[in-house]
Image (cartoon, rainbow, N blue to C red; front, side, top):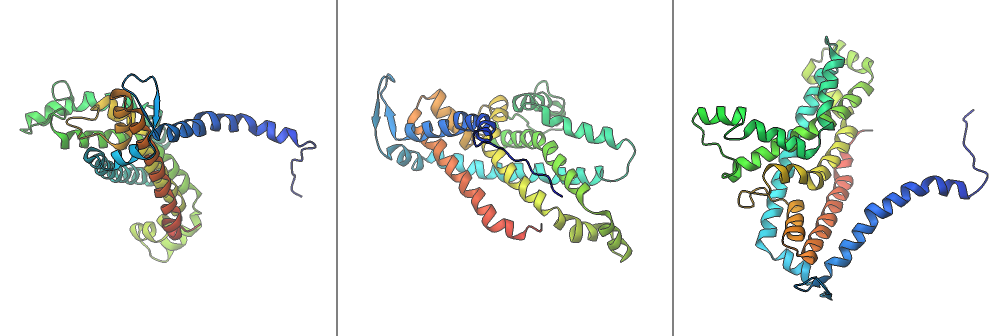
Length: 293
């Protein structure tokens, strides 16, 4: 017999969900509504009044070569961080799922980086790859490589990708490990008895059974790259050199906070929000078909 919770009154259920609804409205829907409203207005030079300009902010943003360049960099940045954060996490999870000595300590150490704030993670990598005081930065220069991410845009993007990926590996590792532990061991043992090697067992049995977890992490990581990497970029390169690491989310900050173009910045945030929603919808529409539940 299954027990169910029954509320006598109709008010109590609404009171229980009211705090979460209030947080969602105040911190999500209200800022989003403000951004949409601001995107249709243009402030005067002194910020005293606003003029309704219809879709002029969107037209200016979409025809701006700098915005298109930021969009291209964001695409490359998203693919690189997603791959470099999910692939090592899956490898580490497979290794941690085995019966090894000190497995508990091994798993705990791999989860710790997720507790590090994005700005702190950027500072850690800055001290590692700084051309003057960084351990690896000095070593690379001693090997004859001209290393200075403050002047070289490719090196700056490489460093930002490493820092953002390292920050997300532990999160992906946690979910991959949980997915691996949920797979029934008799299924894998039966494949081993039939003569399937470790590689064949992984690609034919384990990885397909991990497809729900992989799909979930794919969606989460893309959203993470678009929005949560601002702290890493801001602390590590500040969008430079020469806008080489200025992604879409960082351009929203530069145009809105630094350049005080509130209308254009709001239009960029709305475009980014719509784009991420569209990408997520496409993933659920086409990628989820290959997911085996």
